[in-house]
Amino acid sequence: MQTWPVQDAKARFSELLDTCLRDGPQAVSRRGEEQAVLVPIAEWIRLTQQNQPSLKSLLLAEEARTEYLVPPRRHLKRRKLSGLEG
Image 1 (cartoon, rainbow, N blue to C red):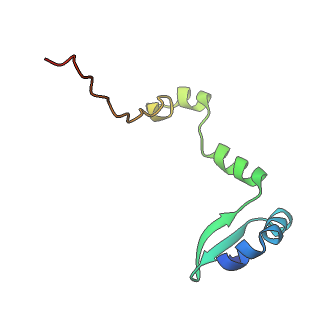
Image 2 (cartoon, rainbow, N blue to C red; image 1 turned 90 degrees about the horizontal axis):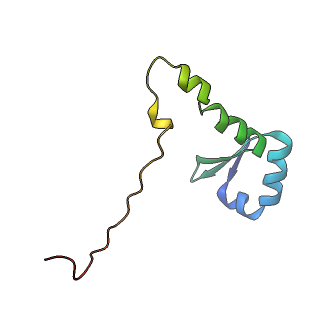
């Protein structure tokens, strides 16, 4: 995997993208430390789908895995209603 300094990645993004599609993932570094990776979309889809269990595996699992079945709750701010409070 080739590493591109962020300045070069910004200035030559088309070349970075072409290299990624041709040669695979490309790292982007800031101040000498790798910070991000550009990967082809097919690779990204494969990686993200690989990490999510299927419904069948959740149902057949010995332990409860409800964190995947219940959507996260939203943290909404409640409005104060004027005139209704005594």
